Image (cartoon, rainbow, N blue to C red; front, side, top):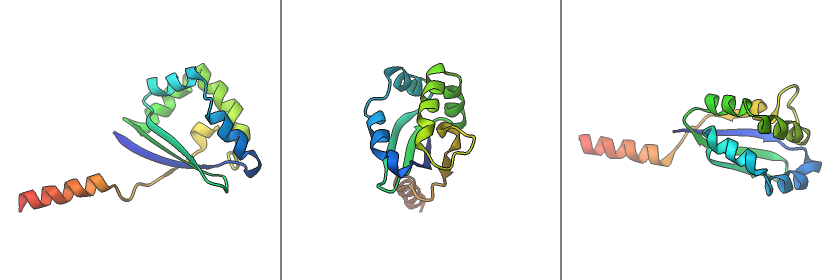
Length: 119
């Protein structure tokens, strides 16, 4: 499972409405995400508009591409695009900046355990 973290920026004057929209995500959108490999998916929003997303998926490329084939995602992205800064011509689901994972506790514990086991 690939762990993916990404960032976007919500317009400061749209934070409350953005949060309200995510308290009531359309059921068909939720199902489409699950059907296309978006697991353990969370969004975190800072007071300054910094939005951090986290998802576990077999492939982020396939997860994004799969959502791109759905009508519900096209409607959701069209509605949500108005909330973001710096997207230019992209939609939120393709305009995010993916962050590099530099530390994962369980990976390092497993590597340390394996090293200890082999000594």
